[in-house]
Amino acid sequence: MTVGARAAGGSNAGHTIVVGDQVYDFHILPSGLVNPTCLNLVGTGCVVHVPTFFKELEDLRRKGLKTDDRLFLSGRAHVVFDLHLLIDGLQEGELTQAVEQERSLKGGDFDVNQKHTGGAIGTTKKGIGPAYSAKHARSGVRIHQIFNKAELDKRLKVLADGARRRYGDAIAGYDVNEEIARFDTYREQLRPFVIDAVPLMASAQKKDTHILVEGANALMLDIDHGTYPYGNTSLGLLPGTSDGDTLQRVGHEYGVTTGRRRRCGWLDLVLLKYSVAVNHYTSLNLTKLDILDVFDTIKIAVAYKDTSSGRVLEDFPEDSNVLDHCEVVYKTMAGWKGEKKVAGIRHYDELPASARSYVEFIENEVGVKVKYIGTGAAREDMITR
Image 1 (cartoon, one colour):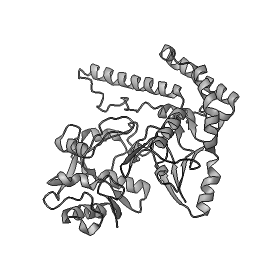
Image 2 (tube, helix red, strand yellow):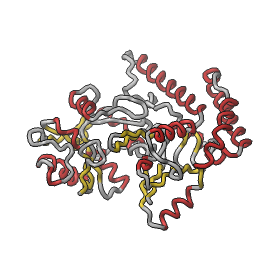
Image 3 (cartoon, rainbow, N blue to C red):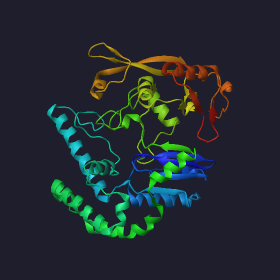
Image 4 (spheres, helix red, strand yellow):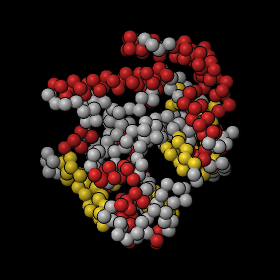
């Protein structure tokens, strides 16, 4: 038996798993459900929108996944209410207005994608931020509190009263009693899944069980180590450039949750080294190497140059505003388009020489071995070194 545990985040995440001809999309549920011998846990650090939990579960079951007795939900995780989704949209709207006002004062055109202090975050509007805000303000609701109707009703009404004072008529359409009634239905449906996760994980560790801890988002979305306050920053190639468009098109890079076109660029070693320093990796998984089959040359970001001072930055700056006046310093390497494709290759020594040089350059720069290399969408298209 193995254990797959989601550790953080909510249904804003989007993970696609391809098994044979079947494609599975995961949002709040652990992707370990595709493994019939894996026990799966939505952990304490997660925030859970209960209707989405059930919808995703039903979608997976319709595709043939057997989930009985393999999926559990920590009672200490927090609830994302429909109220939180509504607040999320209102907060994003306020931030967007702030950007528009700033641009108007400066006489420029409004561009919601441009990064500004106090500007729009680009949230998925899944209620994740407001739910975590309530959690840390000690006004949230834990999953186990759903089973105490009086406590749930009281706490949700307190949240709704606070939102009305803050947003006024903007949430006039929200009916707290309707949401309470929905949870009266969810209560017994949810009960079989909810457990105390601490004994489960302690038992797994004592038995030396293999445990995969699954996150929701990557380092740069982290509230402490990411590009605060923005949920995402993309250095390298900006949207609309030909290479970025090619990476996006060939790699089919669209958000699983939002459907939004992803911004794509060359590998950023400044970010990767920063991630290694924070997370202390012992090995790396280099995914989608096959996407680079179509390029004559390949670029790798090795530093940033501050155009305001001329200073070259080899470390990622703690102040993300510094990036506004940085340009990327690239190393250009030969591609393997003229040699052979890496798509579908499953042995390292079968890779073209230029592809091996690319992999080994990354290893030498970051000081961590690339143990896994993805060469296609199928589960079998993986090189293990």
